[in-house]
Length: 364
Image 1 (cartoon, rainbow, N blue to C red):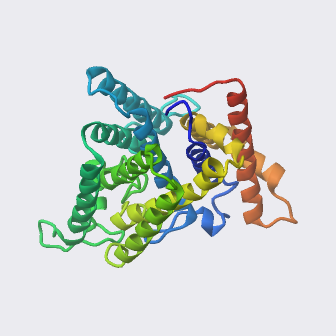
Image 2 (spheres, one colour):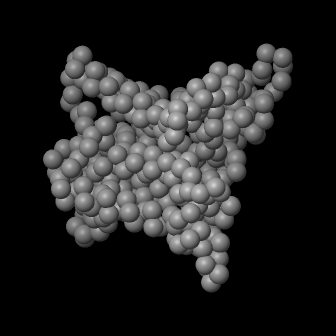
Image 3 (cartoon, rainbow, N blue to C red):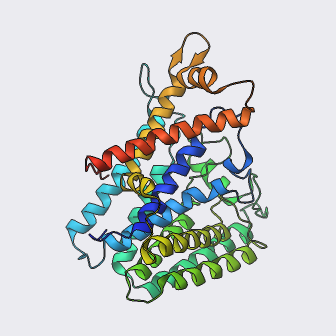
């Protein structure tokens, strides 16, 4: 991004990473408040907003980082290398074991993942941004969302079976993942970061690109324009959901529009507070946002290490810490689980602050 960073973008990025860590590291998955869980299939919870928010912010960063960049081998090479790094880090998280032989069974390891999707989406979005103006990007985004809806909702299978949006074998997203990825999925029947659903997730990122262009423009009262865009997206998205349900696992077109609307709305509020009124707010989140990928990767790696490293015969590091520090008779199971997650969040907030103070920025 440019030297004069837009504070609201860094803060929103940091809040998103913190929220990712919060929902990914409860004390126990058996006792979690409903708002900290994903919707079982159709629907939208606050947790479902987190990943699209991050892709949206990736798009904003692309708009700043690749503004006026020449279409040269060096530029493309830089994009491809960063994309491959993200994919490699994601695959490493999937395959790593903290004990011999240090890698999981390759025949059943999960191939998709959050970092893999970020890498692919970043690559495609950056290249599109380099080649097309905002009008083409808007047109391409609308066409993609409509075609995705038409494909998933109306294209019959070869045996004449009609498609469905439900969690079923005759859902095109699940069908493609099962037949291509096989046992390399998160669940036996689907993967939330699968193949087809990655296509509309690019549009989430492109929406961020477009909002980035608004932030870079000489438009006055940008917060008002952002607010109007947000309300428009939310209205369109919720109306569209009557025909194409809001669904994170499918990354449905209505999901793209609605989560995009919420992202723009929250950004407009933070932008008004920090960049218009110049009220100092959320600095601690900004520190995390500056090293977002690094902190997310570390949190995922350490969490997996804690889950897979045994302490005694029956417990792992995670359960040992949770049961001995956070479980008390005067706390509900859900509160104990939440306090564990909040403690993990505090650790990474502190790490972000230390990295900032030492002027350490690890770019992936």
